[in-house]
Length: 290
Ligand code: SF4
Image (cartoon, rainbow, N blue to C red):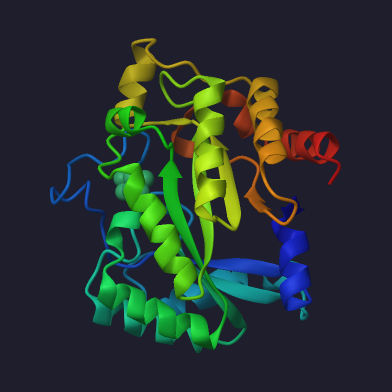
């Protein structure tokens, strides 16, 4: 197992920071084409609460993001243009192509990362991503969350797990590096079911992983279930026991891009342990010998 820091230093020769971008896009299970309301845990910000204003140009969002960390990052650092909010490939191919060209030509950008859904990669989008991957490293983050289609229905994911498997294959064929998002602690999932998701991602050929504990945000469907005591939230030790088991299943060169997520504090309801970021980071460093 490698951490993202170790991996990026190997690939780029220095530390890499992400410059978050939110395109003016939505998501097929929010706008009614597949579903409405979005995944039950997703906030109105579409996982992009930390991104700059989506009304700004791509260049402007990148400059702002770099400006916020450049002092700490220093002159030697590089940046990844990170299309983070909602489903970044859920748009007209031309729109994505222009956004990628603009991002790639910004000063300091050495790679591009795109967060999306496996069912939002048609031939035209894949062609654009293929061209992008020829010019600089391309990371595509797929929100799998679970390999269990019953849980997927319950969380309103609105695509079948087979679509993820196909998408990983297609993305690897065009030279993209695939990072899979997995949530531990989804309703009704046993530890074995969570680890089955890791096995499926591994066997599909995922290069990297972002794990997160299920967290409850205000004004989400999950909040209602949580208030009705229908969802149990994992304790810190319990969660990291599962992460440790997951890492044991992965090949040595697998990259762990995230050991856990931390929801935006303003709208985070549970788990409380994720609010103390410093304590969680210290725990991760100690437990995983980082
Ligand atoms: S697919 Fe992503 S952006 Fe869309 S509702 Fe689910 S988590 Fe939110």
